[in-house]
Length: 511
Image (cartoon, rainbow, N blue to C red; front, top):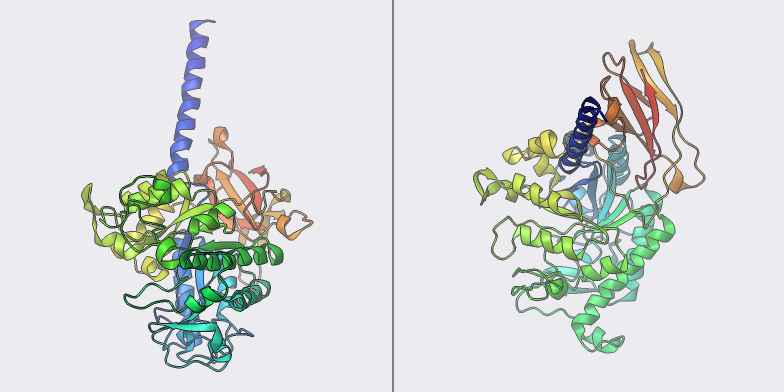
């Protein structure tokens, strides 16, 4: 080989290696698949005193801002205490919506149906967020006659100022599943979500009044703690089985308290983390590791709301632990927006903790995203938190992480892609569009519900692929995309996504 040919080959190899290195770096900084959620809660009172129209305006504005910040999933609280933020055949309207339990919105509004539609219009998932055990909170002064605790008082027990649906009762498991079946079959939700309230948070000096239930039906358990954990396990299993049977594409996820079990000495860390706080396993009787190992949940979002350096529960210690022991199902990190920006990074006192937390989160191989507590805090943008999402961490759109245990078959590719000129006489606007036909599907799991558009400039022939998120210009449910500016020489790829975001082969067109 001549020196000139050798130099050319080496130069070509170096260029190829630099492209690979660049793409690998971009993949970590701008992951193509990442869950980017936010919780919209009702229990903080943000709905009270507003008309339905004012609520829709407020929530629509929040969704616009969240979408602009790259949020791609909303956890929408619809059952806080045996009540409903939708017209339920079983439970009364929530006081958190209208100010009085049982009082419907004045204009017949269905917040859940509205939220599903608004999320889908913005390309976001909508997960219906329920609480399975809480029947009455301390601030509730009266129960509507339709409330399950009014109809079935024998199914609840009092704990401090709460009423709790007794987890020991099979009737309560069946009832909760009935409520869930109603939600997932009447509404086109993408997920069914539960938070961290299982057995009640312990109050010093108050015992859970279920010893008689344990003695009556111990089911072979000799200790009441294991029996309580099994009561919760049975519910989680039943919900999983129900969802897979009724709506197999609906994702089942839980956001547990951030500590599974304390293991301060660090010996045999599989038992727990080097922390010293409230525990899922021991205090709430929530055996999250069991749910993950059994495949009863599709994702978990541990609420790791503490900061880096917090003595009783360090953020990095907990991220490391959940990554190591709960990575066989999708793992996302629950982020506390306001707490994150209130403390400086111990390694960089000039900055709050968001950059350091995201560096940790994205360095964990089993962590596939995050969820923000809470949506309104993201909108309020303390410490430029939302600005950093927009300009850095969520700079480009992302697809949802894959769930191959539900479905791994990609939809067929789009058909008849072309460029067309459209003139709208009603609005007086003209435009050039990419258009395509939806692919055919035999089953609901195969059906394309969204499309990804990738754009490449005239000089980017070497990187025309679907691996780089920085080339995603839109994720849309429409079968067209309007081109902006002079696109001559540009190349576009379009792929189809099914409900689980399996992605089809790309169809290419060059202008």
